[in-house]
Structures are given as structure tokens and as C-alpha cells.
Length: 581
Image (tube, rainbow, N blue to C red; front, side, top):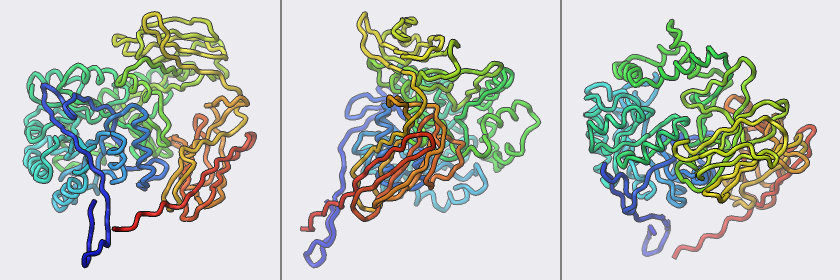
């Protein structure tokens, strides 16, 4: 409790929560939290709150943390700027470990008007502000000093790293330091930087290099600070088997605005699919990354040069699959989409890291004749957890089943389709080919001869109704509190119908407003501050914000051909604060 007194009288008082924990780290034992080994599993997040944009409402920040925890994550990297105090408060309360990171560039520019113009003047104040503001948060376990810094390719990187590291340690020497880098981490200029730090951060480059790097530098601690979502299993295995590898933070935990469409998949010809795979390999090539970053360190505007295009067909293909033009405006690479709905890849990662006799079934999108699904780099092969596939009757559908059990059995309409193991050798998944017929698809996890878990997908009828579900039905009338309302289409029996795409109109009455709408579709360019939204895969989201008046807020959703739905939310008076003693 902090108290201000004037003439012996208390004029202000504030209560600050804090926590006590111990933290040690070594290549032999890894990261120890309160004396127990822990592996970091989670992802990076950008600063925005999806449909709300960059607004850091306390309720939205807490919801982000709740969603990540519910998805089985225990860690988050704040890429590439310090988060809001409300976000860190929520991490403290709910138990999400944090890698707190200040900026994305040092002196060398990545784009013309970035922080490189301000670094020399502001780095000390900015990094000091971060550490001084955040150091009492027990959830923070690692300080970052930068992301994908071009100076690691040149000699001036080491002295810059030293001045940053020295400043952080002067203010807090209780936490390890890291920097995230996608290039060759053992080249002399990069190693001169990492020798100033405690942990080497690997962006996309751990899998091919970790064993060689450990042999060369056995005392080095490694952390995957960014990774391709599709590489979840090999990174889990490497981290699980080696104490000096501290964890895997995927790119990203949640979708965000910008870097448009980097996680998008698309249909293409077999020839295009082959070229895309080669282009993806080129983009992930460490030597090429070193070349690009060395150019940036020497003052070349690499991004502008790339935007001009290239006569190299492979480079053109790489740009085609990496940069997606308008209306794309969101990255769509997260385990959760921008509205907070979990994608199938999230359930797979959860089973990998947290085990347990659980089962999750999902179905690969079919490929039209003559077309291939192209999913490279940040994309994963698209699936939907549904057994509603009109027009596919009799055609083979590929069913993916993720499980921590020893094996799974798959049934269609109570008839056994097959049984397959789902152990480590199978990467905790099985794939079944099933001729589509409407009904009930059931995946059952088996340990020994005992059925221990199940995942059921049931064919839904045509969408006939809308359904609204508010995550919170009682709010504070403080002008800032939020309720996130899920909009879904269902059939006559209340079964979710994922193929509805129609527009929904929203109306609101009472002491509240619609703060934002969204649907998770990274190329839907309709405004987020509106009273209508198209559904995407049968869903949308409405964010309700209170005013400073009490009463009942009524949200109504309507769409042609569907039965309306309403949600009722009570806005209550703010509890009175105790008088100052």
C-alpha cells in the first residue's frame, strides 16, 4: 500500500499487488521457476486487440490472457513493444509468463520511418522506462532487447548490445536477457552479441542448427522466440528432449492487424504448389536472411528493393506467397483468430505440450479437381472441426485426429472406420480417409483397452437461427467495461452451422454501445466500428462497451431468413471505494 499524506492527513492511497518467486537458469538444468523445471509454451502477440484495434481496454487485455491460458499456453512474448500495464496485471493474476521486449530495430532501418531514426536519442530512456515500470511484475521472466536486429551482421552490433544489456541489468539483474534473431547465430558478429546475453533467441532457425550450435557452444541457452505454426511437433520434441532449449513461442498466439495474409492458404495448380514450396524454403534459408540483414545494416532499403520486384522467378514467387494485397489486412497466422476463436492448430499445440487423454477431430478442406492447397511458412493446412460437407457425399474426406492417448478409433454413424496409434512416433495425430456421409463422426481415444476421451462432429442442417452468447452478462457502468458477444448460426436443433456467410445487422438499446464488430476473416475489409458484419465460417463477434449509466443493455442480431437472437447485459454501479484512513 502506497500512501500520500499532507499535514498528517491521508490524501491518496493505492494498493499494488506483487508476487514472490525464484528464477534460475543454466544449460544443464534449463529454466527453473521456484526450483522446478519449466518449458515455455505459447506465442508472441502484437499490441492490438484485434477488432478493437490498438485500444488497450483493461477487459480486452485480460480476455487475451484468459484465451491464451485456456488454449494451454503458459508464456507470451510481447512483440515488439512493452505491453499495457493491464496486460501484465492479468498475466500476474492468471499465471502467464512474459518475455517483455522493447523494440524492433536499433540504428539500422528496416523501413524508412521506423525507430532507427530515434534509437540513438531515445533507447536509454525507452528501455529504462520499460524496466522501471514492469520489473515488479512476477510474471515477467525474461527481458528482450530487440527483434531481428540487422546489426548482428556487423561489428557494431556487440557494443550496442552491451550498452543495452548493461542498462537493463543496472535496473534489474534478476532476470535473463535475450534477443530474437533469424540469421546465423554462431557467426562471429552474432556470437559477440549473444555473449552479452543469457539466452539466444531463435526466430525460425532452431531446427536445423540447435544440435550443431550446442556442440559448438555447450553452455548456450536457446529459446525459439518465433516459429512456423506447422513446425509445432519437431520444436516440441527438441524442447522436450534438451534442457538447454527453454521453449517454443509460435508466431503468433493470436492474429493481429498488419503483415497482411502471411498465414493465408490458397488454391493453386500442382505446378504453383511446387514453386510455393521451393519459395518457402528460400524465404526460410538462413544464408538469405543473413544477406538481407547485412544489407539493412549497411543502409540498404531492402524492403523497398523487394517491393520493386525481381527478375528471378523464384523471388517473384516468394513475394507472391509472402505479401498479400488489399483487401488482406491481417496476418491470420495465430493459434487464435482476431476475434479469439481457437483454430484447430491451437488444439494440436495444446495436446503436444500438455498431454492428457484428450482427443480433437477436424477435417481437411477438400481440394477441387486439378487444384492443390498451398500452405507455406506461417500457414497450416486448413481444416474445420465439422462433419457438415454438403456436395461432398461419397467423396473421400481426410479426417485429422489429435490425441494424447495411445491410439484412436474413428466411427461414422456407429460403424468403425479404423484404429490408429497416436504416440510420439505418429506426432500425436492420425489421419483417416472417410467417404463422406451425413451423420455423426466420433473419434475415441484409447489407452490399453479403455476408452478415455472422445470428440464428436455431427452434421448440421441448414442455418435457421442466430445465437448470441455473451462472455460476461454483468458489467460495471464505468464507460470502459466490455462484453464480447459471439454470434453463431445454428440449425433447428441448435447445432452450429459453419458454412453460413451472410451479413448480420446489430441493434442496441440501453446504456451501452457497440465498440467493435469482427469475424476473424483477414480479408474482410468492412469497418470494425459498424452495426453490421458478415459471418465467417458461421461466426462473428460483437464487442459491447458500457456507458456511465446503469441499466440493461439489449443487443439484437438479425439476418434475412434467420430467426433473430438477443443478448441481455446488466450494467451495474461501480462499487464504492473505502474511504481513506
